[in-house]
Length: 475
Image 1 (cartoon, rainbow, N blue to C red):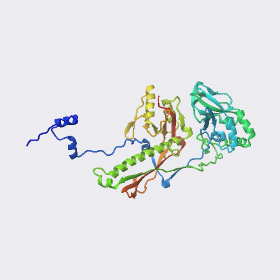
Image 2: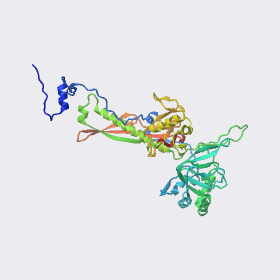
Image 3: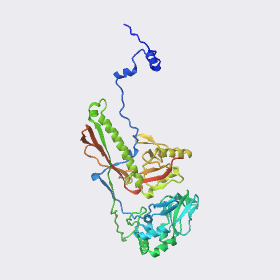
Image 4: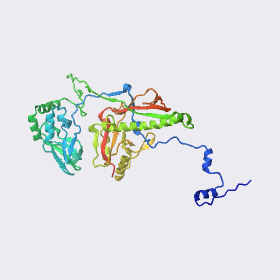
């Protein structure tokens, strides 16, 4: 029995299809595929990242959902950052923000604060301008509204040395309100264009002459400088050493903060929905519920890391102490900047940066002929600086002006470092600190599961966490 096949000659028919039909002499793959078993992968997810932060943080068990960090009592000198308002090109300081100056911390007289704020004079500067000259009288308070300046002091051999950087919100000369007899120990020179507000001591004295509250506050502050404190601002513990005989030993105690910081566990939640027909019928070779749950948990862990970096209450970028926030010397992340960052704390154990920031660091290394060796960390080879792993974290934001931040951490409770917080033993726990709870089946035959992750992060002492800010990565 022979089977003959003819090709239609209708010109309206598809030429490609007719040619393939004429050339084919065996079963087509499209038809054969219906009888074959397809090799499949589990559902893939592009949003999964390395999540180094969650991997390197030591996790501390939190009972009752709250973690209290007890510290020794510190004498806060109010050297925070000052905020401003602007109308066009005119800049003014917010009166209550003047309490960030050491000498005005705790001043409650709103009228005096407003009077002082009104006496500040705006001064625009360009690169190279000198706002403060070393050796001149400390007769003014300088607030940096915008821009970057260097504090230049005298080195050991008489040459100039950069002591640090002043940027948005920083200030200099708060002690000028105490006495006009001192002199500046450093020069303040502009690196970029910017704006500063200056309060001459004469203007301050005019306000103080009319405000008993301001005058009394300054006198109390001057007297409060007498209690001893160590270099970290903590109440000193008196200890005698090197004595002979039987002198009277000093009595002392370690004072504690009366209102210690408490961290409450944050929650990231979602409701996973899956139809009963899908869950019942389409489970071979992969369980649909397991795969849906796996991808949902991955998304929650990504959100968890994002919150631990960016959350305004407990995120690392917002909880770094002001003294631990530094700026680059020239913009790009140079080896000098990395050295400055890691030198701010003992035992820096890890550096986190956006992948683009790490690329910018590599460019600066190459430009200087520096090729640091990597280290093995977490079972793989990673870049390192001074033996400290430099790990990528895409949750650290890149700002519209192409700047980002680099985070340096010391880890663990035993090191008084940074720790992650969670609570295990939750009802229907799926992973440590993450639970999956059955919520029932609705009238549309849809099964619902509540997926919850509880977490937070705590900085045990201020120098455990540091941030290099405004790192230029676009050049």
